[in-house]
Image (cartoon, rainbow, N blue to C red; front, side, top):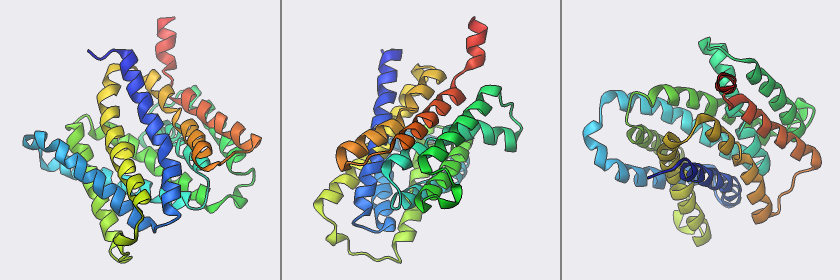
Length: 289
């Protein structure tokens, strides 16, 4: 029997693993091209998850493949922009800026899909903008190129979350995820072919990190999130997931000695606060009162 407490611990483990991916990716990308890194990480992840979903083979249909391809393209763009950006910014910055996608989801829902957006969401937008300015530099014209790329990643992730919420109600989530990972693995392979890097030159250390990122930073987190989120509330999930950029900054410091200035930490805290404000179910709280 899975209790809410166990589900929360499972979701917390997801944010811990996600937090480690930023600094480990940055370390690997210091020694190999982006195309090679994405091909290896995403290829291993896709292979592992496709083996797992063989048990659902009777549920395959054209619609899940079509929707999975669309989501896979968005997911590949998010990976590419995030990893491209992380080569020119810190793992801490990348973690906090990627987290802005949580705030952007309800904003885009209002702008493009005419969904009602309550006042707390607009408050979170203001907090997030102030946090981003403090984290990346007050003058947007002087922002690091890596920060801008990761900001584009956050925008793509927001759309991926919106459409995942729509499509996941129609299909087996594991099959939908397997199609996505297969698509991004194929796109990564297509980008890798022109590079033609000799894979035998990759160090054992980097191979180990890539396998970890594929199995624990990708497959495990997808399956754990899908399995555990059913046993807890949206509010608790949002608060737990807001810890991802905090863990990203923590592991960046522990593993590589990366540090943020007091201004950067203030900006990061404001972004996390914005994520919590945006996703907390204020209407449910008012009904209970």
